[in-house]
Length: 69
Image 1 (spheres, rainbow, N blue to C red):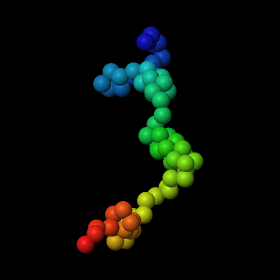
Image 2 (image 1 turned 90 degrees about the vertical axis):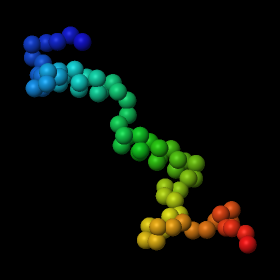
Image 3 (image 1 turned 120 degrees about the vertical axis):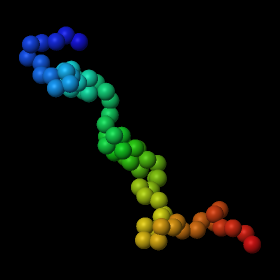
């Protein structure tokens, strides 16, 4: 990367403008990925949240999860 006289540096010597430029080209952020996954799974009818009962910390029984006696 080419350095300009106008570039700002941190106390440790990091070129702030170079870091900003690298971040622009780094891809999606964590929150952008979460939003993308939420939207893309909605298209297939996947529920946004599971069947976990937050108050009790347990999930509802499904026929495949019931234990036979």
